[in-house]
Length: 606
Image 1 (tube, rainbow, N blue to C red):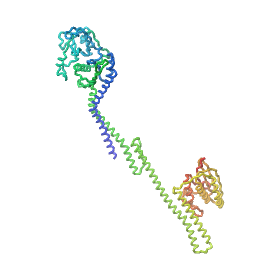
Image 2 (image 1 turned 120 degrees about the vertical axis):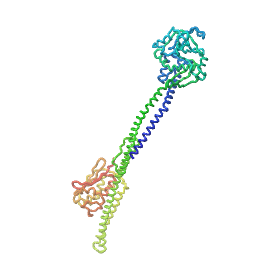
Image 3 (image 1 turned 90 degrees about the vertical axis):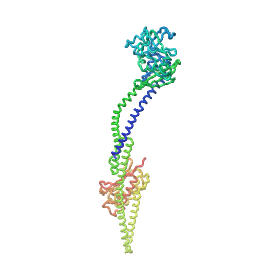
Image 4 (image 1 turned 30 degrees about the vertical axis):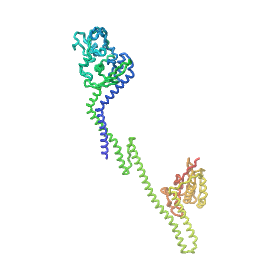
C-alpha cells in the first residue's frame, strides 16, 4: 500500500513534468522561430503604421530625420529610411556633391549646368573620411571627375565616378559603385541584363566638383550600414526599371551570408501629394543564433531538468502520500479502538480538511465509546439496583404479609378470642403501610421516568417552613424535641407542593432518628441568587461511608434497619429525584453534634 501509492505518484508526477518539458522543447524547436519572426514582423509593421500616421506629413531637416531613424531602430531593432518617389533617401543634403558639367553632345540640355549627386549612391561614407586619404582626390572641390549613369524619365542617376581620363571604360579608372546596375539579374519583364542596357543605355558626363557636403556627428550613422543602403539602392533599381509591384505594403525575404532578413516597404503619399516609400529592414540573426545555441545546450538542459524533475517528483509524491500514509496508520489504530494519536494538520487544503475530519471522527468515536461504556456500566448498576429494589420490596412486603397471615390464622383458630380487635387493628396498620409503600414506589417511578416536568411558581420559603413545623408539632412534642429555626424572609422559584414534600421528608427523617429531648435546627442562608435551606438534627451521626448511600431506595443506616422506626425507605430517594428535577444542589453531612441535610433554591428575580 505505502510503496504502491508513492510509486504511482512519483511516476505520474515525473511523467507529467517530462511531458511538459518535452512540449516546451518541441515548441521551441518547431514554433519558436516562427513565433519570433511573426512578433518581429508585427512590431515593425506597427512602428511603420505609427510613423505613417504621426510623422509623414512633416517636412523636416536631415538632423530630425536621423533622430527619427534612430528612434525607430531603438524601438524595433530594425533599420529605417524614408524614400522619395524615385527611391532615393529623403533629406540627403548632408552627404552630397555639386558638379558643374562640361559641354556634352549626348544631352545638350545639361551642358554647363550644375548637377547634385547623392554621394551614398556612388560610394561609402567611410571612403570620404580623412582616414582614407588615397580616395580624397575624387571628392574634393575643384576636382575634375567623370561620371557614368542612366537616364530615366529625363532624370540622370549616377552609377559610378572616377578621374576624368580619356578612356572611361577601363574598370580600374572608375569606382565600382552601382545605383541601378542590373547586368546580372533576370527579371520577369526582360529576359537578360543585356536587354536592360539596350532599353536604358548608360550616359557619360565630365565635370568639376564645386561643392561637397559631409555628414557630421550622429548624421553619419544613417550612411554606415552598407548592407541596408545596398538594399535601398536595389529597391530603387527595381522601382526605376518598373519591377516593383504597386502595393501599399510589401514584406520581402532576403538572405546575405546565410543570415535571413525581412524587408518592409510601405507605399505612402507625402505632404506634396507625391508617392513616397517607408523602407525598413531587420535581421533575423538573433533568433537563429539563439535557436542554434539552445539546440547545442539541450543536452545540459535535459540532464539538469531531469534531475530537478526527479527530485521534485520524489518530494511531491512523498509530500502528498505522507498524510495519506498517516491517515492509513491512524484508521488502522481506530479499527483496534486506539484513539490516542491525532493526524497533524499542516495545510488548509483538501488533505488538511480530510485530516481534520478524521481527527474529529476519532474524537467522536472515542467519546461515543466512552459514553457507551458508561451506559453499560450504568445499566449494570441499574440492574443491580433493580435487584436490590426487588429484594427491598420483597422484604418490605414480606413482613406485613407475614403479620397479616399470622393474625388470620389466629382469628381462624380462635374466632371468639378476646384479642380479636387487636388483630384486626394490626392488620389494618399493615395494610396502610403497604398502601403508603406502593404510593411512594409509584411516585418514585414517575420521577425516574424522565417525562415528568415540574410546574414552577413563586412563594415565600420561610412561610412554608413555618407551616410545616406547625403541622409536625405533635410528632416533635411526642419525642420532647426542641425545634429551633432561623429563617430569612425570601421568595423562591420552585414547585411549592414538591418542595413541601422534600422538607417534610427531611424533617420527618430528623424527628425519626433524633434521640428524645434533643434539638432540631431549621435555618435559611441567603446568597446572591439562591437561598440554602438547612435541617440539622442533634445527637446522632451517620457513618461517613454511608452518607452517599442514604439516597438509595430502601437504604437505612445499619443501626436503624428495622421497621420500628417507621417509613418506607423511599423518602430520601423521592426527595433526591424532586431536587434534581429542580436542578438544585443538595446533600447531607455530619456536623459536630449531628447530621445536616440541605438543599438550595433559586430566588425570585426582582
